[in-house]
Amino acid sequence: MVARIGAVVVGFAIIKLLRPEELGLFLGTQALVFAGCGLCDLGLSHGYRMMVSRTHALRERLLGPTLAVQAAALLIYFVGLAAYLGMAGRLTPSVALVALGALAAQWLALPNIDLKIFARFGKSGLLTLLPMVALAGAALFCALSDQRFEALALGYAIGMVTSATVGIRFVGLEAVHLRFDREYLALVRTSLPFFFSILAYRFSQHWGLSYVLVTQGETAAGVVALPLKLYQLPLVITIATTSVTLPMFHRIAQTATSQRFGAVLGRLIRPLWALGGAAAGVYALCPEVIVGFLASSEYTASVPLVRVVAVAVLFRVLTVPAENTLESHDLQWIRLAGQVAGTVMLVVGVISLLPQYGVISLTYALLGMDLFFFLWCWGFSALRLGRALPYGVHLRASCAFAISLGLAFACGWGGVLRAGYFVACYFALLTAFRVWTVQDALDALRARS
Image 1 (cartoon, rainbow, N blue to C red):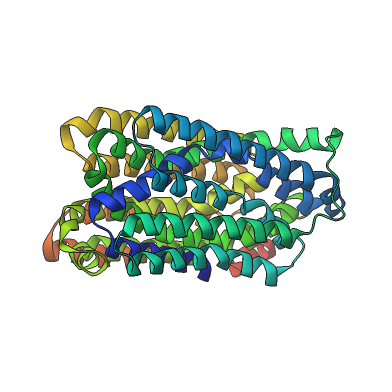
Image 2 (image 1 turned 30 degrees about the horizontal axis):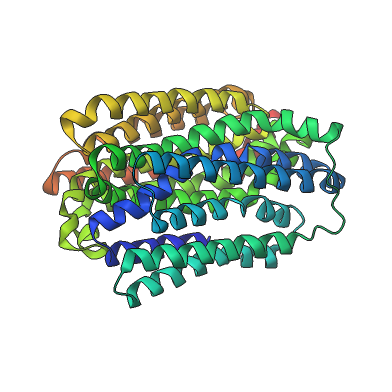
């Protein structure tokens, strides 16, 4: 978690160093890579995590072929992206270096998952820190150079390629076989829903910025990049927290009762609701202060976008426990259907609204997608675990959702009125959603027995 937060902090330092057009070119190029890099992962990393978490002996058969397939996919994607940028007249050496560094960073996912499964947390922590250190070195190189964008691109590419190389060495390939057999076909089948899910998620998170870069130019992309970075900060913390617990979720879902799973899930829900509410509150109440602190006066156009992003952050963070529930019970296709539908909503919204309303339409489309996905995931999760939860849980969860909708409207108002409504709604939200703790689950079990 420290490494992910550090990377976001370094990202804010880069925002402070670069002009909007330079920032738009750097982050927009990254977005072009990230929007389609689900094609490089192919969902194999998450399928590997699910299968090897349950049967450790499968590591020797699955790790080598998966690394080879992902390396080939990364190479093909880089060549295709370079060809597209060349035909669009946007390919320069610096842009190519940014794309190379972004693709190299994607190769760290599988080694990190492997290290966590086998409890090699020291190396996993170091591997998680390396990209942050590489990005910090690139930012320092940028600050010391007169040609800041070019220096940043070079340092970023060198640091990320080095990190990917170290990651491969950490996993140790001596006992790994490069053989495609029946077990690997099972991995491919297991990975299919993850592949489409990751593709939809990455596309929805990064396509908007890349579309703004292509259609509106570098300056507009730089203006919208700052709110999107703020949007990603609580998500980074959330994903870093839940990724460690996912192997345990898979085991419990396979071997324990629904009541036990609900108890474990309860340990995760309360801090995530608190995190989502706190982040949304700060963003909604202090956008001018945040933008003024993190960036120069050239980014004042980002302030209205931060207010909209505040509500999107709330719903996105609150969706994570429901996503974990669906994945742990082998209901990835349900989550995928929601992601695809939300992504279609985002694309249609941005394409139709951007020419008329400008870049703020991207944040409104993002909010609509996150609200829809929130309803989708929690609805199906409640159906899956409904019998294991007491009636009071459903009642209080419904109240909490109604309050969060009120919070969304409150964040749209201005001045002191907005602040007062936010504080009232936030504390009511935390009070209403005091559910799914370990004690709640134990009380339900005692009542049944």
